[in-house]
Image (cartoon, rainbow, N blue to C red; front, top):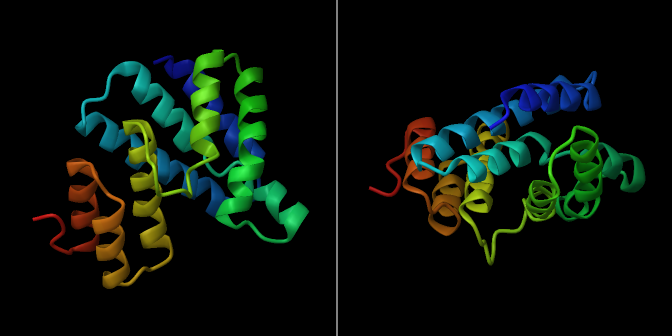
Amino acid sequence: MDETKQVKLLETMMEFDRGDPMRIQHFLKVWGFARQIGKMEELDERTQEILETAAIVHDIGIKVCLEKYGNCTGKHQEEEGPALAEKMLTELGYDAELISRVSFLVGHHHTYTNVKGIDYQILLEADFLVNSYEGQKKSETIEAFCRNVFRTPSGIRLLSLQSGLKLGE
């Protein structure tokens, strides 16, 4: 993984979300959880790079959604985000194959069915780990989401540790 390129992407996303510390904090936390789960699951280097890149840009569509629709529903984010991610990643010199997969992940990060690929699975889990805390989700919601969406042993472990609930045990 090209760490210099990743540092530039992080800075570019922070510039994109300038003045919105909640959004910046959110994507940094999702990236941190995605990175941790990916390392715990021992992803190959390329899949880890795709995962971490997608985690950084996963909510890139929110600003446009708020301007265009007055809300940022998951569906709108999935519609608006991929083109913005593609543009940013192209400008930063990422390769076409990575851009294509990251675009797919950005366009599906609120879709919890037909999950294909460990990068997709981990992105969903990392985003929920952050959203469950930021949204102060109830135990029942966390347990149901864990049961219905989480699949990686590492994601389940981190959710259990964070929530204090006995999940997947």
